[in-house]
Length: 82
Image (cartoon, helix red, strand yellow):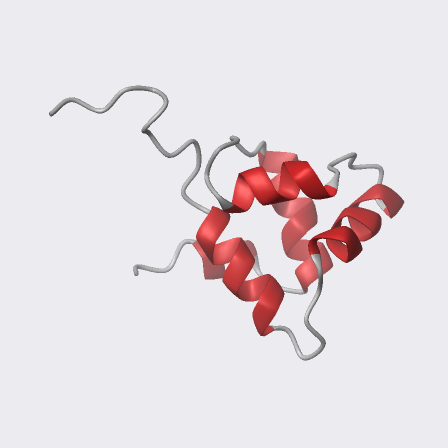
């Protein structure tokens, strides 16, 4: 059966971002992450972060880099084979 746009994942990083966010020493909530991003001038609210993590929203390169910085991870950690 052919996948439709509604069925397709809009990014490959969402589940990895969620795991890294929850695996930090002090678990970071989506609201906390949104606040940290806002301090960097990246305007993603909790809902947008949720949609990214659920692969319902694409993620721009600068957003990905800012999320990595907020989570204190190297972008290369998201590119490791699963």
